[in-house]
Length: 187
Picture 1 (cartoon, rainbow, N blue to C red):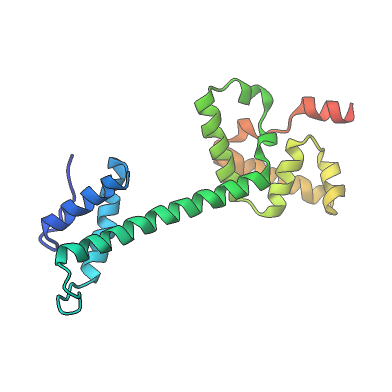
Picture 2: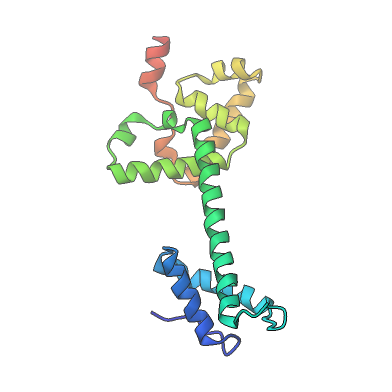
């Protein structure tokens, strides 16, 4: 594995220390190179001043900077996960999957598709998400227009835009309204 080369900008022991500290905090090997670049940049911005360090060594100072940056990355990730989970709970996105296509997938593929759809739904406005949710529940475009107080033409145009977005994201097979559900509701 080829490692980052900093051309003498930073001592090798500091870079090695970054890798050791990242492994201790359970970062994956494929993440460590990116983390290393972030932390090296931070180390280059901060200067160790023995007078102001209160008797601590340069190694202790470097460890503190590295750990602070690693914990910041972990906090940011946890915050992102919480935000996505809250959004996905409020989106109730399972109803937008087509039964036939979704049931034919393996367990891992279902998980991946759910994540892809959640990510796609997060890119939409709240009004667009509401339309997706209503389509997933089997409502017709005319019913959605009545529910939202918009014209049927406006809802049809919005559905066309949404279909194009999902096609662009490669999810058009998984987000069609379920006909069987519509028949049961209106049948």
